[in-house]
Length: 246
Image 1 (cartoon, rainbow, N blue to C red):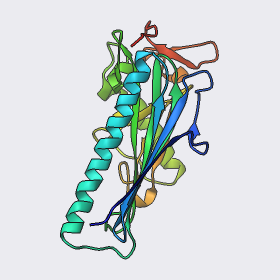
Image 2: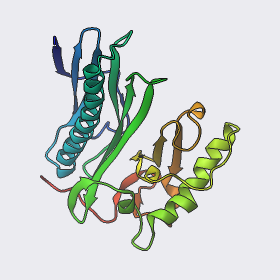
Image 3: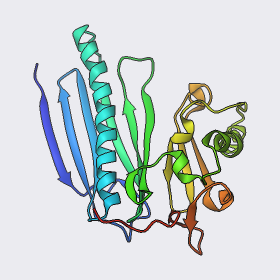
């Protein structure tokens, strides 16, 4: 088996970065790997500079998320190789990141994954993540961490997110859904002004409908969340947390 392995470390200007002008320096690690005529793999991962604990936790979260996704793909390709299912064109895996928010108290973004693995059509989906301070400790955030103590994630999904999802479906002439699939509420990123859900194709409708992006402005859900906003209705942090050093 012949493999090639090339990796690069540098700033990649074409990658999308939002709301980090006053945040940390971000370095992008690019890796390429493949086997001739069989498969190719390209990934890009952000690394956040700075001593704040949130940046360290974000570096771990982005690295772990990417590794888990790549490992799953490697397993699929290994089985195809074992069965000698050689493709007409190499199987492809690409992971492209976007950083939507990077401050000393909050970091968020996603990996957009594009892959082919002998299926009927290519698969593309998102791996979303957010990192912040909870009880003074930096860690990956769940939907419950954004909500007031008396609020429940299931209620938030049914009463807040679901209507926004159905509004987007109506815009496409698609049928509304009665409930959200398990896990959709957790597929969020934080932006300066809204919680942004990246919903992959076939999660809330037929694959032909495509993916959905659903943005819920923070100012519209103040009664639900513990998100602090500034005078311009942009996110400051969660609760009363202050930056922690790590």
